[in-house]
Image 1: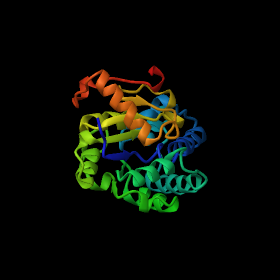
Image 2: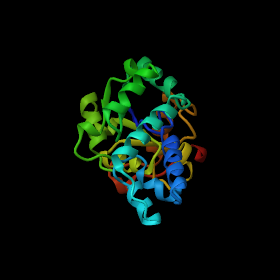
Image 3: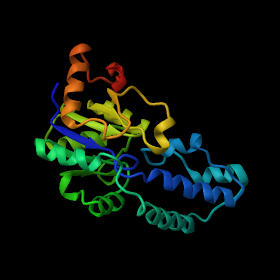
Length: 241
């Protein structure tokens, strides 16, 4: 097994933009007498329109928020709080390593370009990523495979020769459906969520170099041949040896 490109999720994997957003909405719920739990919020992670916080608050409390007003409040607060966030561990090292090894590198995100691109530039990642695919480029976001299939097409690499790094269940479902190798990197909010079966689970992107990842996935592929079909992907924790 040899991979020729890496495809990274953005929110939660490159920067932890998910925790600040949940905290903002929890504050809004508190102000209106509601309660927003991770059990509810998890449906919003890694996708779009998976959870409607306005409708849920109305269901709980009867409060009807003026959406235009609160959208701007949430947007402004989210930008402000994410400016305090650094890159997640290992992101820069893995992208630099990909460039040194001649591997393609892409970002595939269910967020929009107006969100993703400024943060890539802010953290000096623009030159390290040759392809950026966002919800503006596809009809269906994760858990549909469209973003990953488009990333592979733009990289000029078959999906089966790409490794997708994801922190959310929705993202893993999408990458698997695209036929990519999948590495789960649960961080922050997603650490406690149930995950579909990835090929590997890492605590962070610092845990393995890409060269080590290549060896690990090749060893697992030789030990247990893997089909690219969604139902036959075997979960393989690094701790399993």
